[in-house]
Amino acid sequence: MNTALIILDAQNDFFTAENPNLAAFEAAAPIINAAIAHFRAAGGGPIFVQHTDERKPAGSQPWAINDRFDCRPIDVRFNKTTENAFWNTGLDALLRSQRVGRVLIAGFIAERCVLSTLRGAKERGYQAVLLEGGIAGYDDRYTQFTLEISPRLSLEALRQ
Image 1: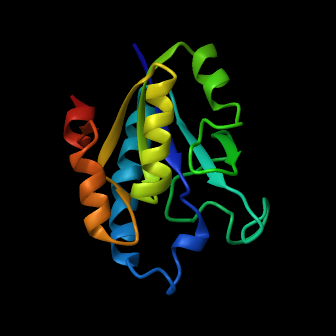
Image 2 (image 1 turned 180 degrees about the vertical axis):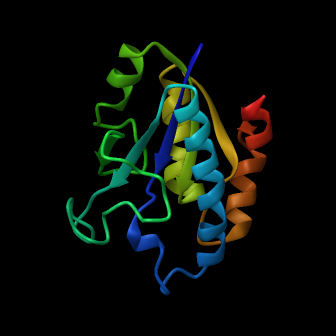
């Protein structure tokens, strides 16, 4: 079964002093990059999904992928305007064309975009799991709750 790595909202606007839980976002970055490296070594790559709205229009500095992440020009990118990365994007069509059956989801905000995308994947018939340590939100309690109620995969298990 083909697996895709979907990285949500790894954007500059989350890596500012205004983020009340910046340390958790910063801690997730190396885990996400390790998953990216694993996928690249296996001949694949990540799919970056960027939230786009009036506050962070496409092409703006807040919208851009943060430099902490190993995002390359060849990587697939989608814009989303809702919390669910599958809603009104080409993500589902791309995954089906690549015969993906499982998605590994990482990124931000745990209880909103991450959880909504996990549910969106399941509604479309994908086996969906979260990357442990690779998600964060503004409040660690919500991140922990999201992990507790969701299927998840550790970096160590991914590497096996």
